[in-house]
Amino acid sequence: MRIQYRVDALDRVGHRGRVTLDLEGVEQPTLDLVLPSWVPGSYKLVNYVRGIRDLAARGAEDGPAVGVQRVGADRWRLATAGIPRVRVQYTVYGHQMVNEAFDLTSDHMFLNAALALVYVDGHLDEPVTVELHLPPEWRVVTELEEVLTHPPTYRARNYDELVDSPIDAGRPLVLTIRPLGIPHRISICGDGGNYEAHRLEEDLGKIVEAATRLVGESPLKGYTFFIHLSDIPDGALEHASSNSSVFVRTVFEPLERYQRFLSTQSHEYFHLWNVKRIRPKVLGPFDYTQENYTGQLWWMEGTTDYFSDLVLRRAGLYTPAKYLEEAAKIARAVLLTPGRNSLSLEELSRIAWVDLYQPFEETPNQSVSYYAKGYLVSLCLDLEIRHRTETKASLESVIRLLWNEYGKTGRGLDEDELQPVAERATGLDLAEWFDRYVRGTAEVDVDRFAGFAGLTFGPKPKPADDDAPEPGYLGIRFEDGGGSVRINQVLLDTPGHRAGLSPGDEIVAINSTRVSHAKFEKELESYPPGTSVDLAVFRRGYLRHVAVTTGKAPPQKYRFAPLERATDVARKVHESWLGIPWEPSKPAGEARKDPAPPPPST
Image (cartoon, rainbow, N blue to C red; front, side, top):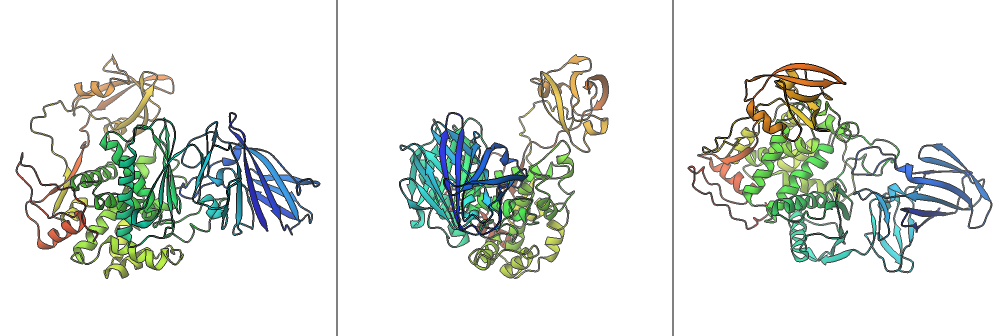
């Protein structure tokens, strides 16, 4: 069957486009058209179909009307009755600038096909073309193959490739770099932006080179960084030859904010290997109508997160100190989550559709992000491998073998294959390790693994000259309840939990003194750990009093720091991992050397 889409920017002010779908070679008496319920890389079901209206069909361009019956929220059945050529038309509304979007405005269009282009059920593997009718001054940027310039027309090998190749159009600033000789475009849409173009070109080029060296080779002929500048950030989404991201337009300064931007870009870029080509079998070809379950998302996302920071270190965009600081932040986030050991990483991966992507008030008490814990477990596995092999192998060895045996060949991973691959790549028996930390729920002893690199891990000591009062701790997370303190989460085994505070409670007074959301944290300084207080709370509209004894707050910061002594193996692990020689801990006030030049890939 020949499948051709036409997209018209019908009403840019009203944010509504018109889609025409021409089908030739129809042989079935009925055809089902379906709009996806999710987008690969974003593991949640969404009602994208809500923007589609007025779907109608007829035989060819001016033929007889074809019966259309809506047989599901996102499925239409056409009674083609042997008509060989069918034309379908509908309108679609799009006005949300996020990384998975159909967004049409007076000066821009961003199209992820899953949100606007229905597919023909049973024909997902067939080639498709997309013809665009846009203002003539607009420029189109996409990694799809161009087959015609006027009007801009593109070809995809199948619907999966179409969904995996977003189309951006408008007046973008397009920068082109050629790291390792491969053209990479940086397409920036949106007014304003405090970026410096040359710096952006240089730093993204470093990420490309470092990531490619880490894996060993690139599968790309070209790549596009789609960067949308807005007032509300939305993160990023990976694609096989691009990534689409939405950032606040001032994200490029100061350095700490810019480094978060670079970390996101590094993460999405590493996905071109890990998840887009090295993938579980269920993640391609896709079933767009329902959840696609796998126990490997911790590796696809958490390990990608780990490697993305390692890439920044390899690229010289993180100093060793900055790299360890970011790793310590991840470790703290995991260790301070009460539900961190409730479920295995494999189970966290399988239930992502109803857990990570649909959090609620009890989520931190019964779950943890597989991104964060996957990162932490991957870091510890890397140190375990480097230690036990005396740096002859590492987690990099595992990703390279995965690339050569699975990514390059297009072979998907079975659910139980990660451990055997890791063992073949390293020559180690890792059964007990996977049983404890991947299939099991054992606490991750970060300090023990840090010792393999001549480091220690733990809370960062309070400076000797810091005499600020220690505030009381309740163990609640809260928001502004119109001036009051509205509790949205109560963490397990904390003072608030033991006292019986509940999500939805509004704290209005402490010891009969009125409190406000704006000053609540400051006011807790008057009630240090161990203080008994009376909280006046409105619970479902009724005033109650709750007696609480404040506790000691968890550490604000954790850190990796050098040990006083390290074995020869630990020194080797440290240098192979961080790219600098190990140095012992220094007396207070003595600076530690921290060179910035990038290390070679191990």
